[in-house]
Length: 396
Image (cartoon, rainbow, N blue to C red; front, side, top):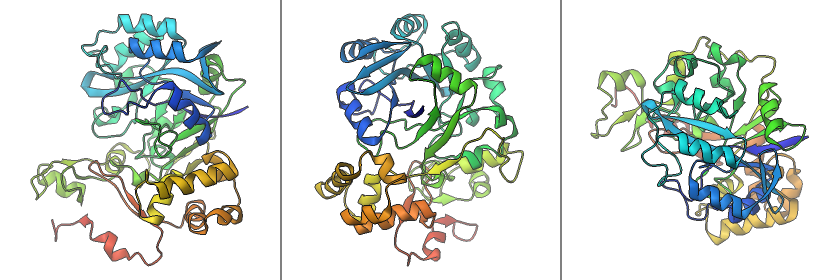
C-alpha cells in the first residue's frame, strides 16, 4: 500500500509552536491534507506522551490512531554541536524509558530536548531500543549535520537509517554528494502548527505492507520510498547565502571576504546551496537506481494567498481553500491529481497557479538568511528585478 507520511512535526510543547498542535487538531487537518501517517513529534516529553496516550487508540506495532489518522512516535533531539536529529520510536513504553535515560536540562520544558551526547553516542543509545535515527534538515546552517561535518560518518560513525533533506534542499542537490547515494531520503514538514500550509508541506509517499512501525522500518531499510514531495528548494529560508537582518542575498565569496558581516551590520549565514557545493563530489546529480522522483509542491493555501495578495489565514484564502477541499478531496490530490479544468470550475486563477507548479513555469525569488523565497505567478516579472536582489562586488 502507498502511504503519505509526514514524519517530522512538533507538539504544543516545543518552543515557538502553536498551542493548537494537539492530537485533536492535528488528526483532522492531516486527513484534509491527505496524509495517512504522521509523526507525533516531541515523543520524549512526558506530558506530550500522556496526551498521545489519552487522545489515541493503540493499534499495536507502534501505531496510535485518532479518527482515521495514524500516528507514529517521533522526536527531534538537539545533540552535540547543536545538531538536530530525528528519531522514530517503536512505542510509548520505549519512549518513556528513553526519555528517562536521556540526560537533558530542558526535556520537561521543551518538546525538543537538548543533549550533550555526540551523534555517535545518541545513535548507540537509541539503537538499544530499536529506534530509527537520521539527521534532521541535514544541510541547514544553524542545526543541520553538514554545517559541522563534511561526512555523515564523521557524525554517527555508523550508517543512520535515513537522511532528511529539509525545506531548502531537494534530491538533485543532495545527489551531488557521493556518500549519500546509498541512503533513503525523507522530506518532512517540521510543522509547528496544524495550519494546512505547514502540516504536510513536505511528505513522503512510501510503499508499506501495512501501517506499522515494523513496516516503516522495513520500507526505509529496503528503500521503498516511491516519491518525495516538497517545496522548491529555493523557496526555503536558508537556501541562499544571505544576511539574517536585511535578508540580502550575498555572493558566498564576498561574504567570507567580509567576515560574514553584511554592510547593514547584520550577520551573513551560509546558504544550503553553497554548503552543498562545498561538499559535492559531482557538478550534476548522480541519482542511484533506487532514488524516487522528487515532486515540487507548494501548500495550496500559499498559492491562493499569493494569487489574491491576502494573508493565508484570511477568510478569502481559507474560503477558496475549503471550497476546493470540499469539492475534490484532500489537498494533496488537488495539487497533484485533480484535472485543471475541474479546479477552474472553483477558481480559474488558482488553476493557473497549480498549473505553474505542474509545468515548472514559475518565477522564483530565492530565500535566504531566514526569509522564505517568493513566487510570482505574473509572467511580466522582470529578470532584472530578481537580479537586483543578488549582491555582487559592484553593489555590496
